[in-house]
Length: 314
Ligand code: CP
Image: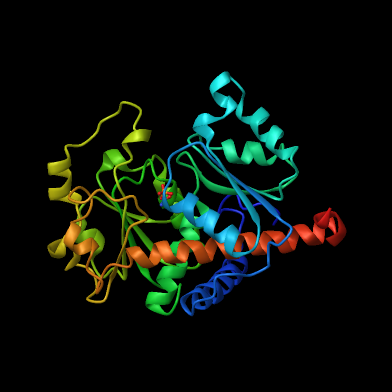
């Protein structure tokens, strides 16, 4: 692959290779290592057209740890404000000859479109409700570390599935690795045609969490609800918010995940989110750096093969 635009085109072996490399980076970072040279002579530009804490910070840190020159554009202060289009903005930055572009955009498909116009590798940092591949990969690494495997697990993904690119990428990845995926939430927050994904759908948390190995909570993504029905937060927490009572339906050793940002007291009880015996939310953030290092390292290796070593060095 010369881009990472989604989980959809990835083969299970490619996913395992990336996770193995990320695991090595994670262990080395835990042992105190902070510098590598896998991206020496590479320039990475981060373009985030939508708010981010975890993804933007970890892509920046990942690039710096691998030795790249990293520039994070402040898109709110760019010439987009003067009417320049997304494509012209991308072409302008592409002319400065970056090697890697990391892009988040509120519109589904915008990152794929941009990738067709530039000559460098593009990594999708989340596009609309379409895909968020590195989030699914970091979730997969977190699950594999906690459960010792990434197959034949029952994973309950709960909440606002309809507006979630995280859910979509996770459904694709977990399915490719032969896991059982259950989507749990109100019918108003389930996407149309969900049965095509080969998942089970439950409206009731007790039923949906039964015997689950992994419980993944999602926030209400109001920014993508387009003026549609938004449930009352108090009622939503009562029926769908994860607390100890609802979690008791899952396996005794089930882990609790959340991609963040989380809304405590809406989709998840704050005490449970902080319970280090059940919650792996902070480990997800930690694995985010390792997975993004692995993703950019592997793309850089592919780029070197395609371009030849001399051109990369120019
Ligand atoms: N999980 C995630 O994408 O978080 P950010 O929006 O903070 O990057």
